[in-house]
Amino acid sequence: MKYKFPHRLRLTTGDQFKKVFCNARKISTELYAVFCCHNNLTHPRLGIIAPKKSIRKASERNLFKRAVRESFRLRQHKLSAIDIVFLAYKNTENASKEKLCQHLEQQWEALILRQKKL
Image (cartoon, rainbow, N blue to C red; front, side, top):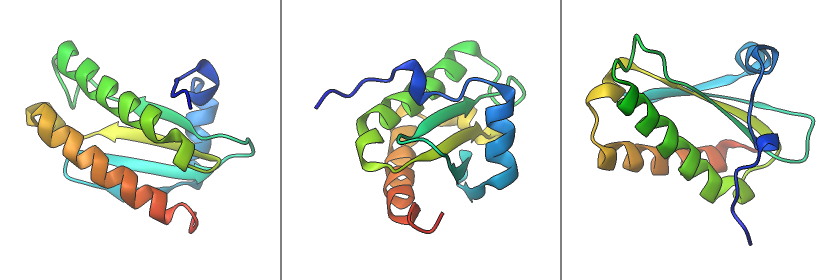
């Protein structure tokens, strides 16, 4: 099985993000919030919001986005047709890469278990 992250698996427009925020269930951790809702497609899609206000350094914003994309890429086959948006909080800026990956791992497992309730 190939684990790629093609353009069709991304939320790209403002309207797509608005739909998720209007219809979503929110799951929060100390580092980020996750918004999820069903889509009418056959695959999951991912959107990431890492504002400068929360994570000041571009390198740290990019690290957060890379970590989320990579974890999504490896778990996309376990997800149903849902749209997911990760929103970084201020605490994300000070988190180590190991802590971020650990939180992402826990969040994906919880999301995979909860996706039937969405």
